Image (cartoon, rainbow, N blue to C red; front, side, top):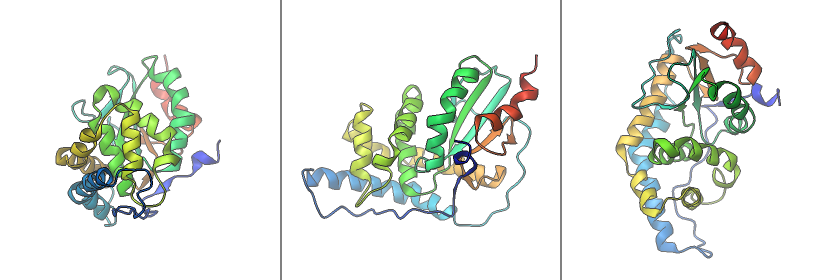
Amino acid sequence: MGLNFRHKCLDSEKQEFALSVSKSSRKNNISRRHALNMGLSTLAVAGAGGAYFAMTQSSRAQSATTDTMKIDPKTDNITGSKDAPVTLVEYSSMTCPHCANFHKLVLPELKKKYIDTGKVRYVLREFPLDRVAFAAAALARCSGEKKFFPFVEMLYRQQDSWSRGPGSPAPRLFKMVKQAGFDEKFFNDCMRNKDVSGRIEKVMNTGRTEHGVNSTPTLFVNGKKVNGVSLSDIEELMKPYLKG
């Protein structure tokens, strides 16, 4: 497990993203697939396209400050006590396999020992490395505050089933949406939601320019970057804040 958590997904590792509809309809309804792809295409133009372009541009990254990275309960995805002595911020990409490993193998133990006991407040910030990750991040935000984290964990648990494959990713993402209890209208409305795409772009660009994020997962403990992503790496940096 240790070796996996020393690796990260770099923003130079872009995945090819097909927006066109697959020629083979198989058992799926073609008109429905077309509608889903139109929604996904709209998101790519309105938000993900801009974010994808922004990630290719060079920027001067500033050092992360020792504050709590300007946590905003109105816009950040947060779980845990607001009075916790430690704020853990994760920048994550939904299609990154190392992020999936972190969410499946490290975060559950971290949640049990520290988040659920009031010692850590956890903040998940989007840093999509490709347009499929951007779309998945948007769907998670659209799911609402109460369903956000369950939706994210579902996507990470089943990452291999929707994040890659032939043709458009829209039908695969829609399958995840249905599994979470949402419908086609939710999917298409979310893919066209400029407020959501704009929020994700802002989070990503702030992480890149103000906190030097260039790979995922990247973690910060009270504003200090964690050198690694294993539980022991995180605990080492948390020690001074949890004494007493």
